[in-house]
Image (cartoon, rainbow over all chains, first blue to last red; front, top):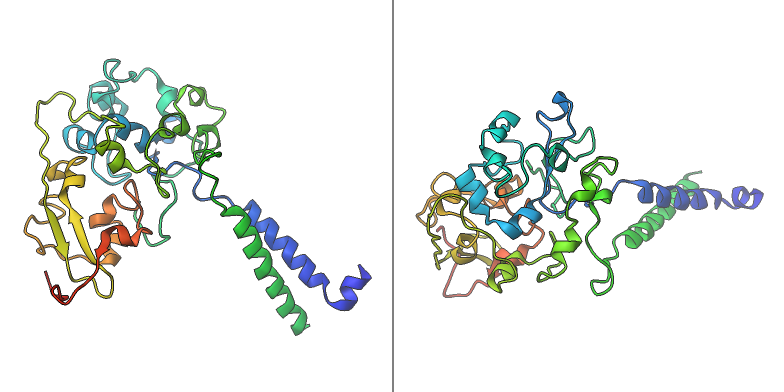
Length: 134
Length: 186
């Protein structure tokens, strides 16, 4: 250790270790799948986990136009006010999640599967780091 | 002391680049799955009762044509080649309207010109998803810049969120400018 101090290399050693550690510990921004949407405008306020909507899963089975025209979802994460009452009435998610096309709304935890504390928005990295609204 | 500081800074930079290089290594597409299980995606609660019942991305996506960005799936090719057959409606009998019409945007500064292909877009989307509220049907009538797109408007409504990301400049800016096609407002 005296060697490091006396030769001024302690700083160098310390710097490398500290920054390598910091970089490794920094949370990765791109762990979610591209296009995943967190819906948490209402969920957690009502005691449920946030909803994670995976675009990748749905677009294998439905074209964009199905949900963004026939079902009526606006193309902006967080812009749709989605109430459980509407889903149970067969609107929005409930157009499919009705036990006919997809699982029904009684399967709470399949949609409400997010980590507590997540903010509403679109996830999944590959962004430019610009001032996006998603 | 000052010299020590400079040395530390230099060392920190080296350390940072080594760590970043180690982290940014792309997984070998032949052997390693680029898709994380839902329990590791920092979105799903691994303790939640539902997460183990859900399909993991790798189970569905491994068999689709690959891409280097986004979901690591070339969705347009997946649809074109019949790897997937997504429904076009739920309850209506509305026919699908595919429009095979390219629109050129010439006013792109020093970048290549943009060729917008309607076909690939209308195979996923309905005309009303973009017209007339976001884009006017008349070519060139809608004024927008790359900055608007980066802000998540116009093309950026989808590109950068669910369609291929804005880091893929040349996929849109794909047509080199020639003397026959000078830059002009269009």
